[in-house]
Length: 238
Picture 1 (cartoon, helix red, strand yellow):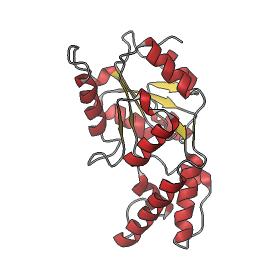
Picture 2 (cartoon, rainbow, N blue to C red):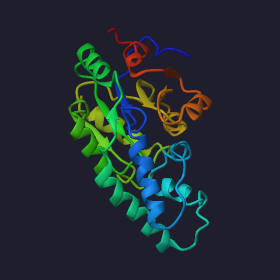
Picture 3 (cartoon, one colour):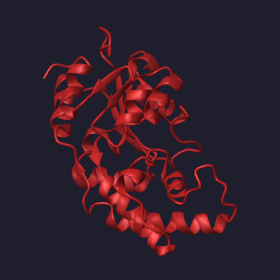
């Protein structure tokens, strides 16, 4: 994998699940709680984990065996999504934790470049995303935290990432606007790589996350096997 070229990135955008936090157990338990409520058999965690990345509604649809939206009873799907979100809202911090090395790397990046804007962009609904970041003390690193319901589209549509680039540029009114080429999207799934590619940004894939096979197949510009590798890969020295 290549290294970010000589000029340092001017904006870093992080996915949440599988990148900053390991939320696998709580997401899987919430999906199986929803399936139990609907009278359906539970699914193995590995199967559920492979469904994560495209937002709550798609996660629920896939768990119901309906990835293409063939279930015509929209009320049934809405009930399933509502139960899942209500369950997850209560249990989102039962087992979730910040990956080892995340805080050290974010601190190192901040120390090397205090003015560098960083943000979170996840397909998880925005309120639990912000609540989780607040709970763990991650929010202090980020000027913005957008979720899958913050806009009319989700990743891999580039709209949210382009919005973050514009907002980050506005934080530095006396500097040249940040370009997509100066932006790095950091995430653990092909969705994150495609989001970057769709707007001309670079991507850093995380093999330690929830979708290791998908991230490798997506061929990100950079590949990290631990959060501790982020600063060096991005051109910052520890």
